[in-house]
Image (tube, rainbow, N blue to C red):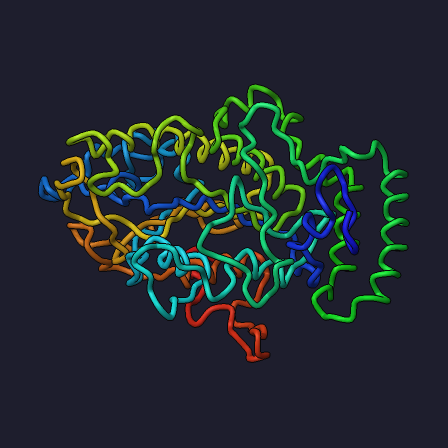
Length: 440
């Protein structure tokens, strides 16, 4: 035990709660679930199939029809094809940063980094949309305002908003014996023991107040109050408990990282968490290298660009289609908005090259696709279009800032508002962009 900290099951309260703070009241009871496709998914092999393009450009897969006339998608998305009337595709997203970390910063914060880092090790200078939601919306029902599964996007951080607005990271819910350790009171069996610990901590804080005059511990009392609220809340514990879901529904989502993450995200959104960001890197832990960075070398097998796409796409189809259907069947389609997007798309032309002489597509921020579902928006439409080779938008060019403005609109956050940086200077939530009118 340390001064100003209370050990609970091996975790100190400031460690548990320093990433969460009560920062305002939500203007509406809405939530956003994002499936962030780290690595940059190919638009050609997902939602912007170009079957008539030259052989070096067109998709490696065939297009299939959906239940929305004119909205053809990848053959490996048969479940999505049946419910296309419940989502909309934005095929004209574009920006100018073709680096993983910096492109991710643009996609998640809406702000272009001052200095680009080609090694993809950069960290954001500004908070991402989840950190902003935490600042403006605060706790609901004893639950953190920003939750990430199974990890936080490595390139973003809350910066000048404060560490208490960092996301609450939930471990992979598909693992055997899944639990949320931050909510497990291993050192005490009931709330009374927790209260006893609280009294002990208050006594220690009086001592701390006598010996510590630095500003470094400012806000700790607020963190601690919220920690107790979470730790003693049956509602919070219930929201994280996916074992309460029927086994057949868990299987329908998929007994893997993406499937169980989507199921948990639905429970958390239903319980009132404003932002849940699922880091869609590998669908099944330890199986194979399967993130979305499909350039030559990452295909792993000579000549097999489509090898990992064939593994990855059915996982996405299953969890995403089930999530959308589940949200609509529960009448949550106005409350919950689903967004699927990455940092950029892939190059129109296939390239054959080292290190293992395989085909692949390189980074291409000039044109890519996002999927949006729910949120009370207009579904069953395609917004924007790229040219015949998928090189750039030719209809309704849109930016990550426009998509984020739509997200903020759904959450009831004024995307034109500002907050102070480290020096007290006002920083606008978005430098530009407007909610996508076709969805409203």
